[in-house]
Amino acid sequence: MSDGPIDLRTDVPHSARMYDYFLGGKDNYQADRDAAEKALQEFPAVRVTARTNRDFMRHATRYLAGQGIRQFLDIGTGIPTEPNLHQVAQELAPESRVVYADNDPIVLSHARARLLSTRAGRTAYIDADAAHPESILAAPELRDTLDLSQPVAVSLMALLHFVPGDVYEVVNTLIESLAPGSYLAMSHVTTDFDEGDDDPDGMARLLQVYIDRGIPVRPRTRAEVARFFERLELVDPGVEVIHRWRNEGIEHPRSHDKQVSLYGAIGKKV
Ligand SMILES: C[S@@+](CC[C@H](N)C(=O)[O-])C[C@H]1O[C@@H](n2cnc3c(N)ncnc32)[C@H](O)[C@@H]1O
Image (tube, rainbow, N blue to C red):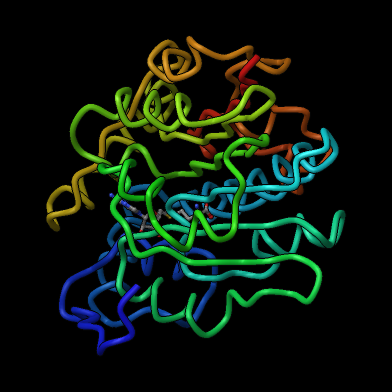
């Protein structure tokens, strides 16, 4: 990871900073706020979507720690919003080791400052593009922090819809590198609930706000999300809207599926 100056490109909106704005964070600029306000006009529930996604990340992390997982690879980390994944994992098991990876310069600058290792566990950060998983897997920061001969949970929360190219190949490359007993946890945006609603196409219009600003985004159906898990054993209840996935840990269980519009799932490599 280079420690040189970072060009934050504050003149154009970034998905990570728009997400930070939806979550009530302060790590965003005027271009991000303008785009996020347009997104709120098109899909007023987007703050619920973002908060529920963050809840699901923590919920999934607690589930994985409960299964004995002590190593995490979180790709598409986002701007730190407490508690972050390493804090959730290390609260349950202080020795947990977490590697974060993101390709956004502002995420990188905040991660350098705030995603710090604890005494017992370890946390590392990689500046990398999810479209090239081999570069993540080969990164010295990962090799120094995680032991790939032991189970690892790979966390891809609200990431893959932003990644262009063959994302099934990306996921399969990651899965192939993992030891048996490892997990894949994911959330992914969908427009499945746009139909039959009193605001048809609301999520599609939200996604168009990103596309119009040069941020490619691709929703997937439930079946398309399930395809990511073909080589894994899906944890019950399988691919589900995230506020329904074992929702005892989710703070917004009464949201409508349309407001959430994210599928989530966890699969185990056996
Ligand atoms: C909506 S945020 C999700 C943050 C966090 N995973 C969560 O669920 O709260 C999406 C994140 O994915 C990152 N991202 C988008 N495309 C990426 C890529 N090709 N490689 C790595 N990270 C990417 C963005 O920078 C952003 O931080």
